[in-house]
Image 1 (cartoon, rainbow, N blue to C red):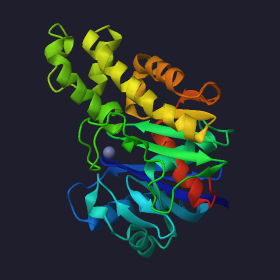
Image 2: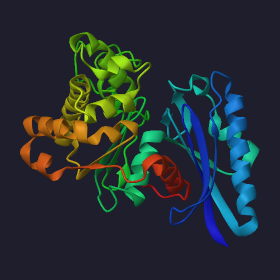
Image 3: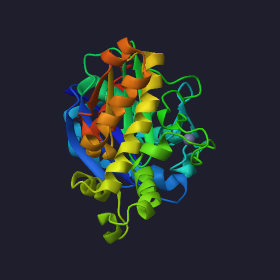
Image 4: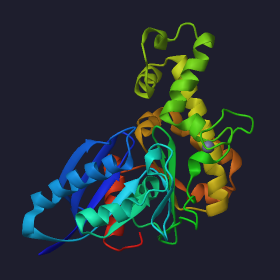
Length: 315
Ligand SMILES: [Zn+2]
């Protein structure tokens, strides 16, 4: 019998669970919506429902070793306890792994979603073969995961890798974390939409004026068509990301920095501005060493990383 694990990615919007083998192949996947604005038990039920679908689909063909679940939260990993989950506040302080273990009869390990993505990319994706890597996920927010000497860095309070909350503008936009001017307020999808709105007055000819409820993809498409407002928005997003990455390059000396998430689709509009800031700000040798690459696993990075630690591997 093949050895399998269940692995899941609990996002603010979507919940995805898969049966994964020891080579990282997704043998079966089940997807649904994350119950929003409800109590934590509804989330437990949704996870149990999709996990049971996966277990039924693989039947007796595999021995399931455990269940790894990536969640958008700060987790105190030695206790498997959810410390803070800004996007799913009903999970704050909730014993999610304990409840799932009771209902599924499997050992359940929780991991921060961005750290899980870093582990996934390190195992089978863009940072494979490198001992020290940083993974930045530019989505609704900005997530980060750090792997040093082959091991994920989590810290005793689980906040290591919170790259989205590095300050890049001291008197800047207020952030949900309580600080001001965090990277998340300048380089996430929601920041791109906000910055575009702020610039509309300065660019009366922008095509964006004709799009109702535009999103980051609209802004990217207009930018590719040389709309000056949209080009400027991505320049700013890239510049701020470059400022944060310059500090990380100096401090951590990574071999590779992997950039993923929805905003990475705008790569060609922002990456040169990221590189320019790094050349300007970071020490020359670590800046030249650090390869800046696009994520390879797309939306599966978190699930693949969650599978990796469900197999008991550290990275
Ligand atoms: Zn913040």
